[in-house]
Amino acid sequence: VMELDLLSLDSVRRFAAAWNARSGPLHVLINNAGIFSIG
Image 1 (cartoon, rainbow, N blue to C red):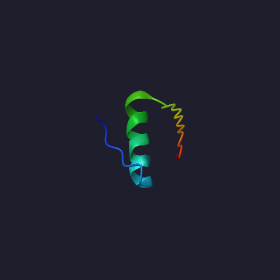
Image 2 (tube, one colour):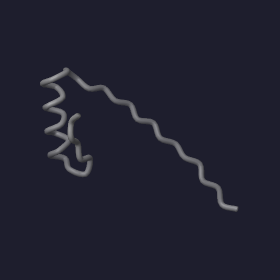
Image 3 (tube, rainbow, N blue to C red):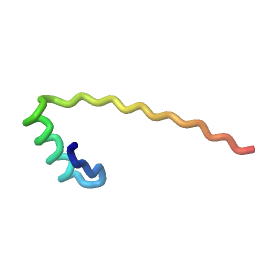
């Protein structure tokens, strides 16, 4: 388990450095879609 606070750029940088030291590059694709209907 690794800690990551997406509101903190320093936290993201620390996470990336720790991840790269352990596992190599991290490749992520996040897709998010939503539908909202009124009525």
